[in-house]
Amino acid sequence: MSDQCTPTQTLDAVVVGAGFAGLYMLHRLRQLGFSARVIEAGSGAGGTWFWNRYPGARVDIESMQYSYQFSEELQQEWQWSERYAPQAELLAYINHVVERFDLARDIQFNTRVVSAVFDQAGSRWQVTTDGDDRFSARFCIMATGCLSAANKPDIKGIDSFKGPTYHTGEWPHDGVDFTGKRVGIIGTGSSAIQAIPEIARQAAHLTVFQRTPTFSVPARNAPLDPEYVKNVKQNYAALRKTAKQQFVAFDTKANEKAATDMSAEEIKVELERRWEMGGLNFYGGFADLLVNQHTNDMVADFVREKIAQKVKNPATAALLTPKVIFACKRLCADTDYFETYNRDNVTLVDISTTPIDTITPEGLTVAGKAYAFDTLVFATGFDAMTGSLNKIDIRGIGGKTLKDKWSAGPRTYLGLCSAGFPNLFTISGPGSPSVFTNMVTSIEQHVEYIGDIIAYMGKHKLSAIDATKEAEDAWVDHVNEVAGGTLVNSCSSWYLGANIPGKQRVFMPYIGGFPPYVEKCNEVAKNGYEGFALK
Image (cartoon, rainbow, N blue to C red; front, side, top):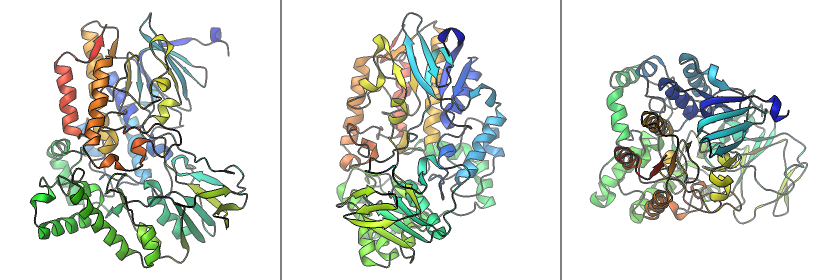
């Protein structure tokens, strides 16, 4: 279709992505009286929970907290069934939000944004899609998610396998039946840890190919007690306030004491208490977990002992035991993950020192040994934080691309803006707390902050806002300095992009904690958005 045949739609804002971030951004923009359109590649809303439909997929933060808090009515009316909501229920919740706030009329589905180019003369973003749509908007807001660009591994012969292949991040919407199948799964990260027990219950045989073992603690998932739900709903404001005061932006019943200030007996009691609490409450066990090597070693050794108790075969248990810093990779919460390796129909293959040679039409080979499968599953994660943005041709002042600017690692101010790209915002972008927190809470903070900026610009008749290079440099230095003061950047993780060949290793999220981050954002706003150039 020629340019002349494609009318340009003029809007105040284009929002890319219809997950938790994009939906609330649309709602907030409407509240402020701005026109907006959400562009979504999928056929429905949901983001993470639209695409990730693999067996066992569920949230790893408690449902009562992993939800919007901008609407008290929404908080009160929605009923969660389990402590950790499964994917289908999360998607139902998101669709309820879409319907309740009449969001669908401003969402364009089955459409992928291919370019966003800043027009300096008009201070507007010119956005084009794969369907030849053209939009002109004052603001372009990226709600593309931190973990949304599926990473397909670069393994020789990957396209030669004659059976079906699946990626956990791009699962078929009608599900997959593994009954009677010989299944191979590559990867043992958080998605695999949820999927493996479920697939093992169906498959004739499941072979797991593991490069790096992962720390995982019991989720302790269960149906929600109606009395507990009633109590939370009566005191939701207090729970939300407590959560926002914690490092991870959800209530972990945090212990404010460092292990160095506790006796050996107190430490042992706290470790067992955290194990029984289950889930990511482990983060709240000791105030010095991520900064004190001795404390971290104690926690890591405790979990290693639990793994040894769960897995009957000592050799298998040894392979499943992580040797890295506890929580330097994302901590996982599981249901019967380690116990699954006690099944007769499950085999673990270590590929840490002898990687997969090649994928063949019949299966794959490791160190010359052939494995035959009917189905292959890639649980190989995502090109985190920057992958989804790099798929779009984003060009700022002087035609410079964001991908080129970020070639040595992402550079942002507050994780929100990147110098040279005026009026472009990233929700939970690199340099913000994002993946170290309750994502929904971090998303809401970012959406409201962006909304405040846009309203401020309207009030003061400003056409453009851009991060200054000085403020951006200072923030990137601060993000790196804070990460360097912890144990978390001490191993190869997707936090650093280490799972993507050729990607520059830079610690991408802000690990200073949610409360200090919010304090910094509020200070910036109070000082007339210092660190931003306003035109």
